[in-house]
Picture 1 (tube, rainbow, N blue to C red):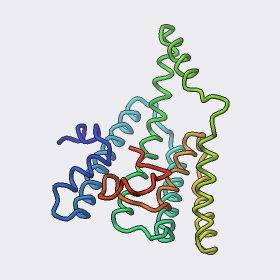
Picture 2 (cartoon, rainbow, N blue to C red):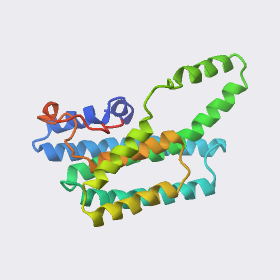
Picture 3 (cartoon, rainbow, N blue to C red):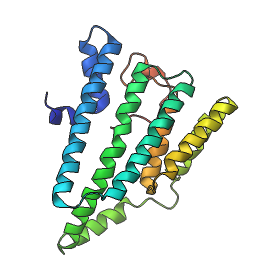
Length: 221
């Protein structure tokens, strides 16, 4: 299958497909994660190159800020996987590395969206539809704030850790948030990712998964 075909599947479905074909379930999962991650990176690389050609991509300062964010996120991930109960094994570590790729893709995707919005504003026929879509997507006043729920759950996961580990992870996560200026949506994704790394884990579509509690942060793509 080509990368285009692979990325039309969710990562969970693709990895389960490869694992079912491998004599070693863990080996198949790791191979599936590796292939999906390569395809995901190739798509991000193409998007970054396309933006660079148009001159609409992130400037040097924005790219540097993202590198600081990415380094802080990797530092948090390493510490969180070691502190999690149980500690992250090879499969969970590989999954965490895969899902971390969403932030680099979203970083470049945000610039592509700005470019597309700029084009739509120059076309009067498209403006009303765009405004209607934004209005329709607005949350109802009585909706529970998902970001607040994510922050609270992240705090609950930290509270069950030994005090030294809790303080270490709190500081490492603070570095993640402080290295960039995320939108509300990006903050939510960061908290969901942090929860994914810390919460008990069973690979998607693995045997016995139906009997396990639904994770707070399911696989994002």
